[in-house]
Length: 119
Image (cartoon, rainbow, N blue to C red; front, side, top):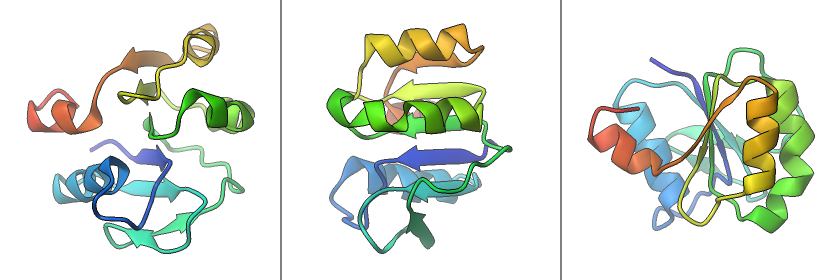
């Protein structure tokens, strides 16, 4: 299983970030929820981006390009193996930065990857 950080996590069950958290946990993945809203998603508390984790395989982004800039250093310091830009989160600048730092970057939908066993 791949420990996954969800940036843009939300307690709102109608949002795709919440649906992804639920699906990731259901499929046996451990998650770290990073967001600005208080609460939890899939039974895991939502944290502020304060702690650097050194065991994250995948970061999946559910925030738009404009808000991502403040997370650049956090993402690069976390050193995930993969960075997923979900629909609406595409960002050529961060994509390039990720690849330059040895992080596999991909524009994809986490929910589709999970549903098709490609995660």
